[in-house]
Image (cartoon, rainbow, N blue to C red; front, side, top):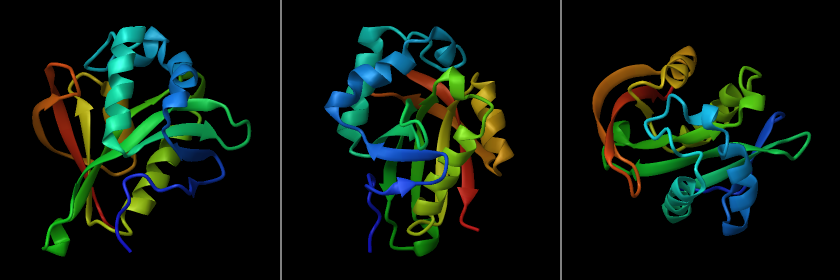
Length: 177
């Protein structure tokens, strides 16, 4: 069995991850159109339709993006993805990144982000030894959230988001338990 960037059946009692489809744009943009979702993000304008369209195109091209739905209500709550899978011959160096995540404000502080990360980490750790996260240098909310689940900051560098200028990001790591 090998790592699939976009598995079809990732679900827990709180959320379900569904491979992102072109037809999901409107529902996802409805969540993304809130400027406060992006206030600490490196691209604070992503709430604008044309800027979000670029994000969405990058998500579709990644072949690892998911629409996040509430398991009970089926409501769209956000998006996340796997990317940069590194299938190193040295099994201790296999890795993948999780990121480009956003969740609507109605779902903040209610365990959705933690449930999302747990679901994605549990799947990834079946195939890799390390999971990395790129988090904007000024995205304190996301830095704090990732540290709460055990991630450690290991580096800083410029990350070039799809179709955007590069921005300073912190690199966080969680190793397989």
